[in-house]
Image 1 (spheres, rainbow, N blue to C red):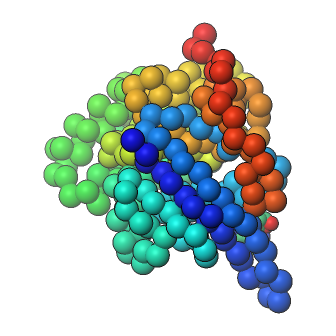
Image 2 (cartoon, helix red, strand yellow):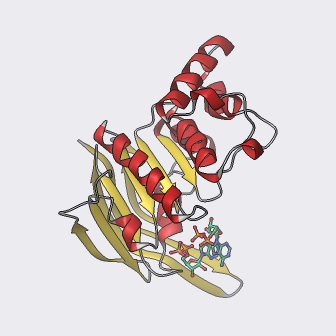
Image 3 (cartoon, rainbow, N blue to C red):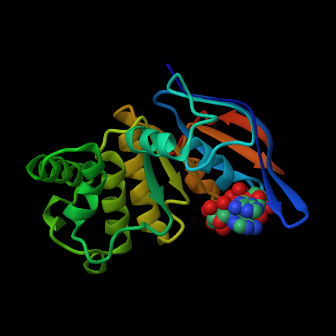
Length: 233
Ligand code: ADP
Ligand code: ADP
């Protein structure tokens, strides 16, 4: 089943009199259960493409079909709804609320989905247990290590059972050992059937994924299957 299909999507930014073509023409199809890395030099369009795929922004040209729905021309409100339902975001800087406990951070996306407080806590606790952090549910971000913070963020991304997990440099703020631990967790999530798309500029991190897409100057330069993904050690 195809989850993501972009056809010739383009994105231009106007900077004063200058037009920056961040994406020129990108066509990509991603199926349910795939684990894909986007790589490429700084400025090649990785963040822009992730913003399109994550429904944070719409393309200035071309078509984007997400789970059979054309999201290319949606309004802000429609995009926000699709985003809450379909996408789990993981960021380089974790983006947790500093004053909220792990449980509260993970439960946050469920508020928009309309669950009761008891249901939210139950689901958030289950998500935290899934990343091995149930016993840290009442800790705040500053009482957790970097790796633990990223686990909380991953639990938050998963709590709504999204169609895709989008991770932008998920190991960018973590030391090597912790980075590999997080990649082990991603490998487990992939084994359970999750669709994962991540941006990374580190080869050894990309090697965990099953498909590596390289961008350059707003175009796909290379799109290859990784025959030997790094396995959990
Ligand atoms: P990457 O993530 O690969 O570093 P980006 O998608 O962030 O690349 O950027 C691609 C190009 O688009 C760069 O030239 C960048 O400066 C430009 N760009 C990205 N976002 C914006 C924006 N909001 N406004 C203007 N230019 C942007
Ligand atoms: P990353 O570290 O993930 O590559 P960037 O530093 O490229 O992120 O961009 C961070 C954010 O700033 C993105 O949302 C991107 O769209 C925006 N951005 C990037 N370049 C520019 C720019 N030249 N002008 C305005 N916004 C930009």
